[in-house]
Amino acid sequence: MPSINQHHRHPDRLPDFANMGVWLRTFLIVTALSFAATVAIAPGWRAVPEEFSIVSMHTQPVTVLALAALALAAPLLRRVSYVLGIAVVLLVAAGGAIALAGVSAALFRIDAGPLDRQVFFATVGAGVALVYFHLRGRALSPALSEARLQALQARIRPHFLFNSLNAVLSLVRTDPRRAETALEDMADLFRVFMADNRDLVPLEREVELCRQYLDIEQLRLGERLRVEWHADNMPRDALVPPLLLQPLLENAVYHGIEPSTEPGTVVVNIFRSRGEVHMVLRNPYRAAAPHQSGNRMAVGNIRERLALHFDEEGRLDTQVRDGAYQVHIRIPYRTEPRP
Image 1: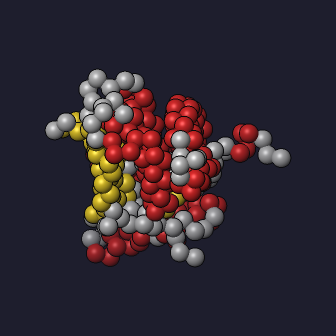
Image 2: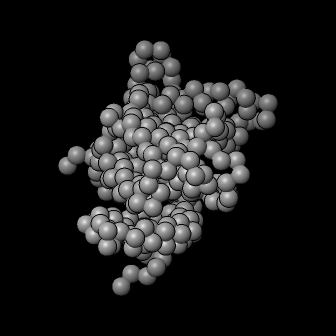
Image 3: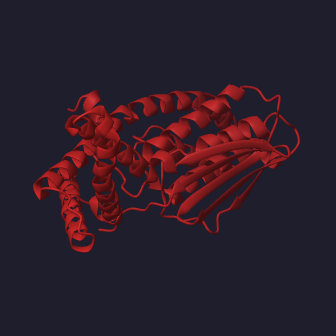
């Protein structure tokens, strides 16, 4: 039987080479290695700037070439094993150094030095970058995010469970079929709550879960809760972190609808634009609503999980405007690799 640590072990996977955050960090790593090599080989400190510019002239183009090739091969790399992926990355780095040395010599008459040294530096640079991303992945292991997610769910479950059960009990005699449907929806919701929610899921599944949640809330709030869905252009196959929208919708109901006796509208707009998936949620803003810290907790938790899965390409912005609280999530459009 696997231990708890084994169960929560961070899965070994290559970085997403199509992610701009990966590109930025790789360039910083290569620049730091180039500077260290320059300091080691320069005859004196005064020669460091000139030597560094010469070293960078060789290393940076190789980095661009290798990253571009790996970005194009990203769908393929997601399907191979971690060890094979490492081998591919190292071979691409070495091939980039060989190709650039050949082009420089043939077209620009530039001598890049011994070819074996160029290949060595390119391979070492790629290896150091892979080690960095591996250690970073473990440091950002879902263990911390899962702990915060569980704390968030522990706050969500009690009041949602009690309120929902009371709403269902009120329907048992008057509308037993509707009560049965509500209990089935609750079972589906709590099955997701208790699942291992580290892997990405299709957006369609997350939206279906949100619809079930809002149907349950509609039982007890009635006409006070109005929901507008704008999801005709939603990319159903886009991969998102599980429980991405449901906590935000719960906050929208808890802070925007419950405090008032007047009807309120929660607006959900999901669409794809320029390779990104946008999810925009709006609800009435009650400045004096209780437990505003709970809202910040949900937003902070989701920001952390977006960074874990999408690095700098996953963003969450909030704003209060025209009496409404708005959450805008942007993530890159990613889908399951086809077999």
